[in-house]
Length: 117
Image (cartoon, rainbow, N blue to C red; front, side, top):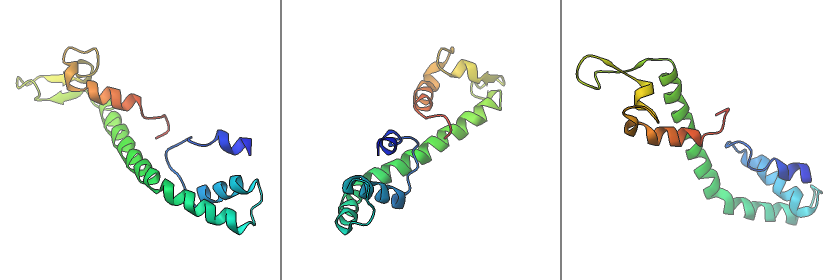
């Protein structure tokens, strides 16, 4: 049972059926056959429904942030931003750049996204 608890919270994606099964196992002390443990697991799972919904939203947001970061890593910058024909390099627009106010919030957000998302 200790091994199961260590893995709680790793990764954003959650399989509700797997979580229900794990909750039932923990409630029943490791035995899978108890009907009461299953019912209690269903109750706990219904309480966790908003958590699942938020986790799904965060997962989508994390994927979006990663997609933008990938675009930034594979391009020079923004053309036309300064209205003078020059490319504004990403390094100037990100944290510690000359115009960091444009993307400080992005850098703070992307720093919260775990690797692998």
